[in-house]
Image (tube, rainbow, N blue to C red; front, side, top):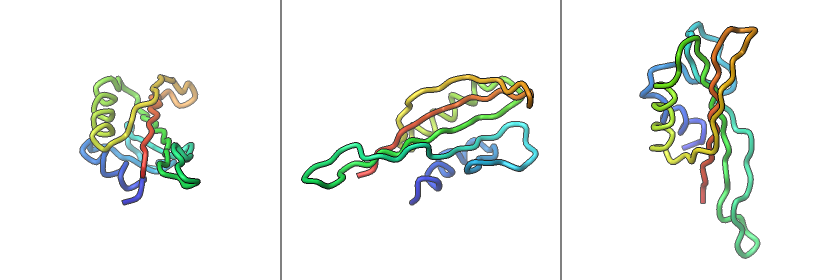
Length: 108
């Protein structure tokens, strides 16, 4: 399975729109995601043994996202993603709360 499909599958129980890079629907709460870094994590005998995939989820909403963030994190953890960092933003021009959630997943 591809990384993008794994993310879509992991977040499907949330019943909110999830889209790669951009979302053009009309829902007030949705998630976009992208890969911001792919790099080798471990080499042995001049071969890559483990690759690291670093992804960012962006949760966009006009309401309190506290419970939803916990649900997203639970889904990602169950799918084998490792939490790196989260931070809160507010997009003044859109009047939207924005939660940035960064994860890593290793592949052998």
